Image 1 (cartoon, chains in turn brown, green):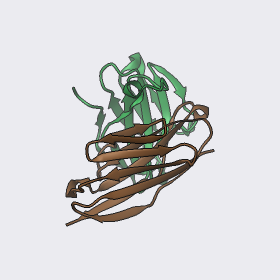
Image 2 (cartoon, rainbow over the protein chains, first blue to last red; image 1 turned 90 degrees about the vertical axis):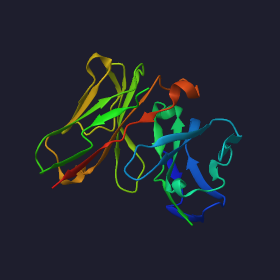
Image 3 (tube, rainbow over the protein chains, first blue to last red; image 1 turned 180 degrees about the vertical axis):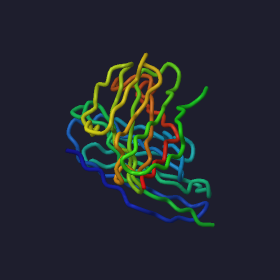
Length: 111
Length: 119
């Protein structure tokens, strides 16, 4: 089976930097995705990592270490609109390539 | 370009009643997914279609849930009869392909979902 862990909730201040961690246990790892989901809205794609290292995309960056089963999403220069749930999802060969999602991390950005 | 469209956005029914959800994927996307999302949880896959073929329905409770994707475009998910525990958000997603390893083909795009409340 697969197990994905991420913190349930986090709070940060506007303008600051926050790191949301995700750990996973899976066999046949084939990529890790981060999605952002505002309350009552659709999850939207943020980033994808399949090789070790850092992927940077504007204010958002995502890191992957396959040997440690670990990823993080880094959000810089936080804005109030970044308040949302952040979902980590792992894809595995032995699951038909489907995405297995974590429970999500609810981020609250305070002024 | 239009995103994934779902309707209705909200549905309230009494238990034991039937209910149906509709999804129109992004034009040209071969793969369509139905997910269930409970409050405070991540989405869980119910069924995946490649064109009109259901290729992964292992998580679909087949005693009460059914789905179809006629002509390989729009899809409908049905529950009959609905139970109290079915209250959740039902998300539809689509991608150009599935499992190719190429981000431009594998990325799933989600619709806004249908929030179902069973009383």
